[in-house]
Length: 326
Image 1 (tube, one colour):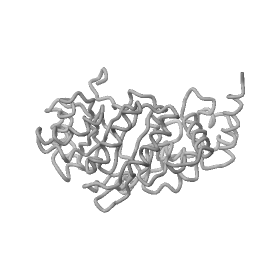
Image 2: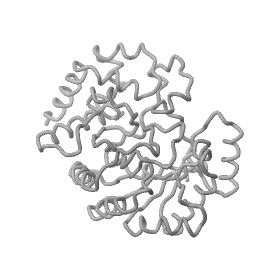
Image 3: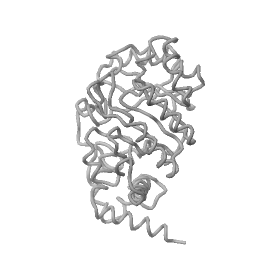
């Protein structure tokens, strides 16, 4: 917890350029109304263990040290998940998993279902507790899950996302506080099904947009790789920007291009970089017009800024000039 008693995201123990997220599957036993990837029991997209291993190997060569496996629901696939978790650990990764916690009906069941993941080598467990999940089962399962995790020595976190059901939200928060379980208060994202839950306004100017604090390279369940963790079910816009890095399995020449695109996106969000988006908007003629628009999120700004080939060429030129400077 931080000095105010709030929970700290467990993946924040690694800087963003060292993190990898693997969206292993879109299959889920739930169909939560806010799900950004629109997972459900009807979705069948899933990575194979060999695809995950390939992605882990490539990412390791790019300096990644931490991987989070998510879905969908990874606890539906114990055999495949324990195989790739063990592979990740053997290659030096610190491994966390995200889950809805459906399996934690009581303390005994929680420990039993978690045990294979612990044996395979996970270090952290992230669980959701909000009105969207409580629609399917009580908040006590999230509490059981994180307590089981801590009994195995894992780092744990509970994620809460507000809803329009204020009474339910209050009951969930009260249950977590009574159980003395800190939680992370997340925003409802304008992605996937979440778009139907938010009354979109005019957006905010660039000066009011917070910096991106969760930029993480993500392997999508479809087999594509992105330099971003906030993936919508429709990634067409992202595929027209450097945020799209390409398929998991690529030729060596293409892998080098992927690494350059990933570095560009990370530098664009890095306040210490010469191509930090706020610096570019303040001073570069190709970017200053972005400062007059309004945006629903930092992701919307990124899609507009990096969707222009001329802007991309300019950013790459600046990075190349910096790397060429002795």
